[in-house]
Length: 283
Image (cartoon, rainbow, N blue to C red; front, side, top):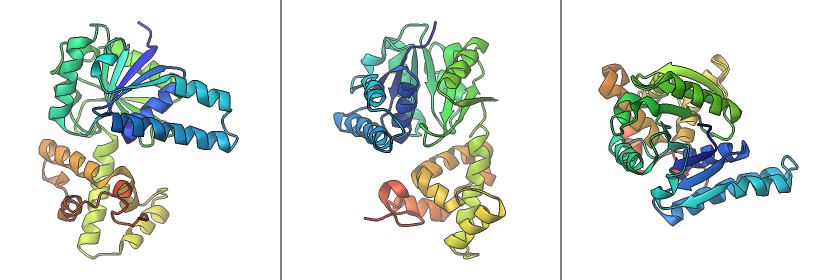
């Protein structure tokens, strides 16, 4: 079955970015979330980004309208029942994802492929909420999904070769570079990235250097485009904590989240999304 219509569950930063990338590549998209407020906000952000590109002369106005016309929004998960592929992109909470996939499994045809954009949770475990473990795969986009090229295609224990091939081909049609990895906590990207961010937070907590110094050292010393504390703010400190909690539970003490990170999340300092994290981003 060719993939023509994609359902996306979650209209936040990642879901909206994936929806934009899919629509730009010619796919019909259903963007679903739990409230009209969320789906409207997600769609409006896509529209704003496209209008900015159009205003800069990087996108013809007709093409902008064609892209937007491919995206339909809904607050009813049932509207995804005719999708050839459903990508889940909600918060990094396993119980919530399981609930969504159980519902989807009951309403979608057996041939529909399920993908999760989880950044750390076991694909094999999530697939157990469905009766289609062979057609269940990880499709881990990087943020911002409408720009970043990498997609980790994560193969669960029972994911079929046909499903991996189909999702790899889809990612390529979306202009992405798919890299296939096996199911393991954090996969490759976050298993390598999150300890670096966590250790940078420890360096700040232990007063080894200022936040500016820590970021400058990694930018100039390792040629990173963004320092680890800047990057944590960009990702969202709550998301970093969620991922580290999964890694800590599954892989041990090496991944224990820094107490300063827990304190900042508890205090609502979540990074760019809350206008304040390790840095301030205007009020």
